Length: 193
Image (cartoon, rainbow, N blue to C red; front, side):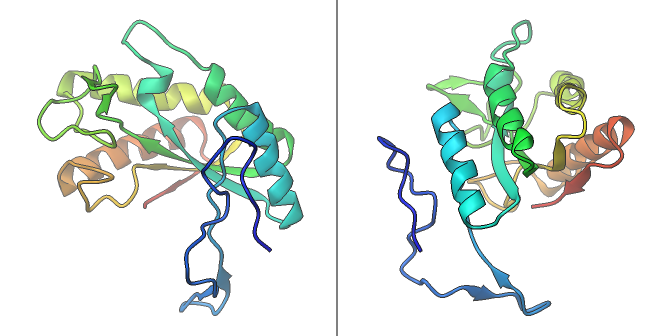
């Protein structure tokens, strides 16, 4: 069964890949399904929850962008993430979030990024903002206690598409996420992508 998109959204909730056969997991023989849950607004969140219920799925994963929560060092906006976390959590879904260090938005360099290599998907942080990044992660964990099952820093780390920094940068930021999460929410799993 394929599902369409919420009215007016061209992003299908199920990947319309031409290969419609499930992929066998070589480790345990189970079947892996892909789901791109749309969670941009209240209607999309409810739509995704309904589809998840129809498919008997209890887990949701989405990207979280630091620049959307903190457009400047002095300004913070949790409204969007509140909806994205509380909607699925209230529907008893386990939530996994991937922290995406967006490097540019609307052609502007994100305040916490080094200019070199920064792109729409990623950047290396300015050293003076690494503590701010740890504070951002701490704020997420404290704001949503018991609601985030898994968290990871970036995804597909060995590519210019998802993370433009070096392996050392990726390990440093992943460890920063790990240390911060485990200090404030030991039960939350920190994953690698």
